[in-house]
Length: 299
Image 1: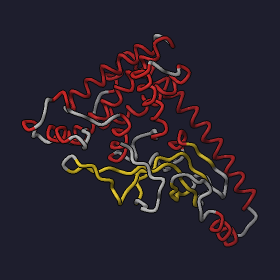
Image 2 (image 1 turned 90 degrees about the vertical axis):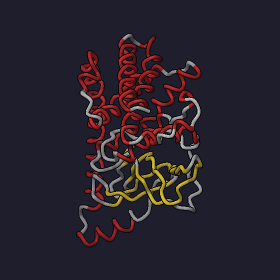
Image 3 (image 1 turned 180 degrees about the vertical axis):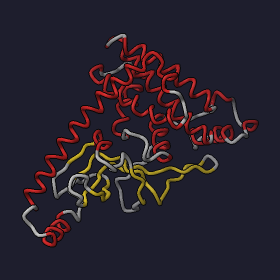
């Protein structure tokens, strides 16, 4: 639960991951597994630097005792239970909502790849580069928050890191710009001939309700035309911990977006491109709706 130890561990695992990656597809199972471990340890380093309790499994009382300096009342240190990669990501996103460039949807292939290799020796080699690039993009802002020198962390693999990230970002920006041009052109065709007053009335009518039906929707200004669009996705209940007891927060949930849709200009943005559309977030903390039966409680 020591932040410095976790940072050092992350560095070692990432070095091993990059070494495996450059060996080629035959070693990519090691690459994605080690990259997943490195990412989890770095996220935990950030959380533990704030307080060790932020990385423990709150359902395990002995772990809470260790994290709060009461280890003399707890079992062996080797029995400490901590959160996994996805939960660590969600906690960091809560603390750094504007700085994490990938969504939970982007993260899940990395978590799945790491778990698949660790538990079943299963990995889709065709997804290696995409999975690895998502990992690198998540790590970068956390290194910045921790004031870790990126040259020191990436070492001889810094140029490889830059190439993978730059190429992925370039492809995403091209795709995002194409979507914006198409949406703005359609909006002009539909509403360009209307007076401002008439246009406002029509837009208010067609954008008042979400067009995507998923677990939950949140209103959001469209980056293409400025109308009200809707961010849609899956909601997860936020758990609170008190003396090892788990309770579900009845006031707040986390919306993990699957996409954004605007009925006015037909702009549709998948989770993988959200970072390139202004202020569209990768995750939103919302007031909980007790009537929402689709809420998923992650254990």
